Amino acid sequence: MNPEDLSVLIKNTAAAVLTEHELDASVLPETVTVERPRNPEHGDYATNLALQVAKKAGTQPRELAQWLADALAGNDAIDEASIAGPGFLNIRLAAAAQGAIVAQVLNAGSEFGSNSTYQGKKINLEFVSANPTGPIHLGGTRWAAVGDSLGRVLEASGADVTREYYFNDHGGQIDRFARSLVAAAKGEPTPEDGYGGDYIKDIAQAVVEKNPSALEGSDAEVQENFRADGVEMMFAQIKESLHEFGVDFDVYFHENSLFESGAVEKAIQTLKDNGKLYEAEGAWWLKSTEYGDDKDRVVIKSDGNAAYIAGDIAYVADKFDRGHDLAIYMLGADHHGYIARLRASAQALGYDPEAVEVLIGQMVNLVRDGKAVKMSKRAGTVITLDDLVEAIGVDGARYSLVRSSVDSSLDIDLGLWASQSSDNPVYYVQYGHARICSILRKATDLGFDTAALADAPLDLLTHDKEGDLIRTLGEFPEVVATAATLREPHRIARYAEELAAVFHRFYDQCQVLPKVGEETEPIHSARLALAAATRQVMANALTMVGVSAPEKM
Image 1 (tube, one colour):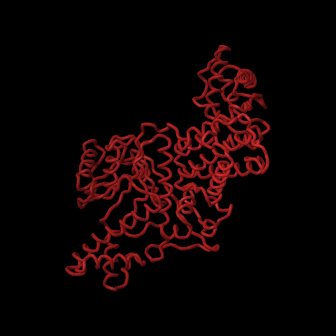
Image 2: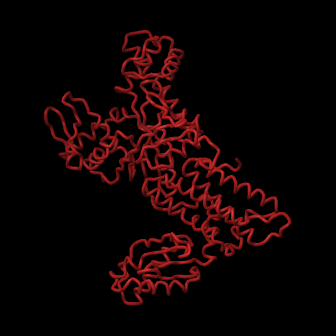
């Protein structure tokens, strides 16, 4: 019995006892909160349900708690139910009910932890979305890791997720990129507002090798030659780097397609027809303050050209018109103003503003030997996705970026994350997984049938450390559901670290395999099943954060 099962049992029991005493059962919450007590001596789980609803139902908390304790005590899954304080209910599970969690994990395999929270929901998840003017920098790398992990967590929660990359190969940034390539090809200094770095020289050289006449023609023709080929080459490098990082996208959405298809014109006309745009000072403005924005936004400038927000408005409409129920934007630290702007755009077009979510990611800093490693794309000392991977590997890079909330800035100690020690969180979790794989290989050599461990006598698992480990395993589905609901995949990483720690404490005190010359006992099979279930949940957690689960280290 896992916490979710226990929550349902307590709610059903509470409904029955309230009805029996002719009290109002409608006061019960939709979900009963069940928690692990801080002091294990108080039981396996605790709930404050009686304190929460007793007065609303017309009775006293301790009286309701006693009714619940008496009723639960008659259930085979409950070993003990007792009252504490003003009405807390402490519960200890029967060994068989607790052991059933192990069988549940083994039978579910890679599906354990999955839930139906977003079943039937189509979610558009847009992340990275860097224009092809240079390699993916650390901010984009953070979103690559976190975005892909969030996609995995949402999929594990039943959602149909579209991973999307939005980009533009025209505009001011691209013009500066093209001018930088031309200057590099001519052997001239980087333009004052241009991009530096060896990658510019490499791409410029590649453009000339592909098109020997790229430098011939008018200035405009030369710049277009380098823009077209340079952008294509840069974007190919970006895609390759992301793929090697384990991140691929379902859709690469070209901003200019919104203008070419007439989507921008259509969205603007819809807003005009609905009275959501007004004309002032020769420009057309969106009444965005009516929808929570801090000011109205210019959509069509006085010169007749579309402002940047025009593309954003059309893009919001496009996402929902493709059938998505939820659009999640993952943007950089300098995009706070987009939250109200995008929601206002959606609402003005008649879509649900609550179906637009904007997650803002903070900066990433690298530290080596106690000193900050600086980054600056313009100065040519950019720290890129490839640099981070080269320093600490794909697994170290992804895990280090995912395990912290994106709401806070992140310092990555390159020395720590490259180390093979328990101080390195990803090494610690992966080592735990590999250690269990080694145990299972030894068990096979000793003649254990590791394919039938779900049938082991799991009711023998009564040691305190066994109980701690089983209850930690049982929490995984709730951790996944919470991570999906709150858009916080770092919860999965932190859970994996806790699980590894709990397993190591179990392994230190509970002999899993028989010693040399010792007879095989049923408890060995039960503990081996518990170890195998732990390995499965570790693997599932590592998969959700996009990190490998090695069998040997």
